[in-house]
Image 1 (cartoon, rainbow, N blue to C red):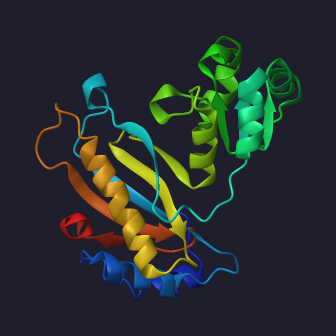
Image 2: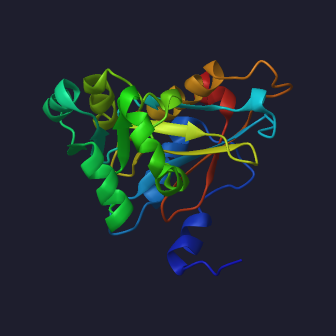
Image 3: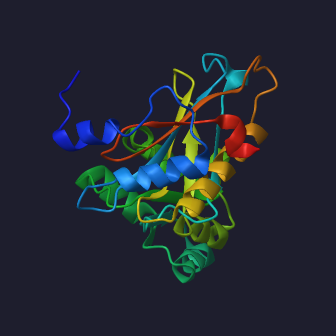
Length: 232
């Protein structure tokens, strides 16, 4: 285990590790413990009662948080013609086709946070699978980033759209805001996330579905939240 700094050690003393906090109380404590010189990201870690080894128990999708994530995201759109113009008008930071694919392949250019593509471009974009896939940047129909509705897709990403995907251990880790957000906004973002995950519950999942919920800032300790109170 890596040795934690003094700031972390002081913060963790203020967290009752045996308690499941009410969401509002947890967010107030989380904000109080955020002491870094930058605006720390607030992350939620949700353990689900699924077995990701089975295809029918995968949980994956995307959503727009009610209060966004607090991060300005740079968007690349793979499109041509009218759809390229639509992307530019919607606020995409970069728009292109073969030129962008070549730039990524030959120059290793990856100065964007999200990529969107029209369906007709996926034959071309597919060449970037080995580069974009491991970084979570590959456009995917399941997350709404392969679409002809380019305007909506760009606006959603800019508004704070997040993507979630269960890992091998059955956990989902996503940003739900910044430490500078008020506690209510953070609690509402968390609630929206949990409600979305409940809607996405696989039919094959048995037993308790939301096993645990923990929130933390970039530099802070985890704070356990009572799942029932978070969505009740």
